Length: 358
Image (cartoon, rainbow, N blue to C red; front, side, top):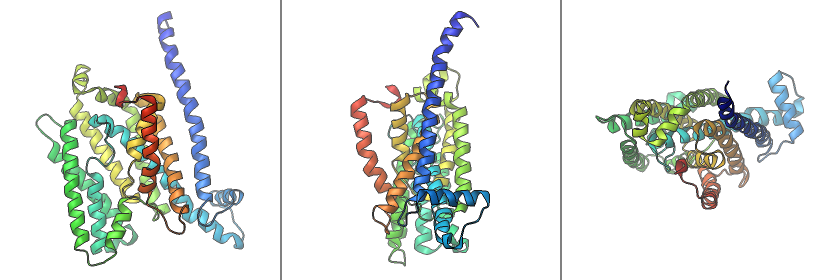
């Protein structure tokens, strides 16, 4: 290696060390947050007991008959819920990063493309008219997933033009169809034969992890993990997309083709997450900007830290939702907005931040 190459490699090595230094504390905070989230709730379980129950469950050990209730609360109820909160928070953050780069819009989030509204149509149909009743407890998530994927396909077909999938056309089509889906959902609720349908649909629209089970975790976790890996492998393409199509063309990249793949990926991930948690707003919008404020606009660094910060954030949001007014639960969207809005505005005012460093 020449002297000039050695000198140019030094900043890269410093950045690598800085990234590792940032990741390790976040992993520790996430692990601690998950443990606290499992221990606390309307019926608190002491931390040592929580650890003992978790060790027994993971290693196949046994607990005394008198501890059966605490064990069930810890392992069967809270552990899958808290883990799902971490998965959903991580997934929404990662998808938010990808969508903001794809459409080059600082206000974009996983729901701007109409995916959430499409899922809401499916969910409201189940709640109001009992569709997919044969699927039992999976009826709502199945209908939401089908609605999200159907909406994604419709947005893609409507937004596609001769020049491919442009950012402006994609955003405008998504916003327009989202209004159409919301109108359809309102009509379904209006004509519903059950009087409490509106309340149920409204609660689901603002996000909830109350129905989390072990069976709802694997698909969501696998989808988020795969999407994160794929996006990290394509972080340079995201950097180029954020600079505009002309710059991308100058660098030899087919921006419409890349945008099409990213749209498909983000739509699938969003659909899977909405199916298990409802429409949890604000996470996919705020966390990417928060991470950019901390580590800059480079997508490799942003995509490394965003899932960890998003997971930590939603674990604590879920804990607050089920403890502040126990035994009643607040929708997750209420808390994400109450916390995120002032934090976001404060950060913007302090750092003079603009999307992508512009």
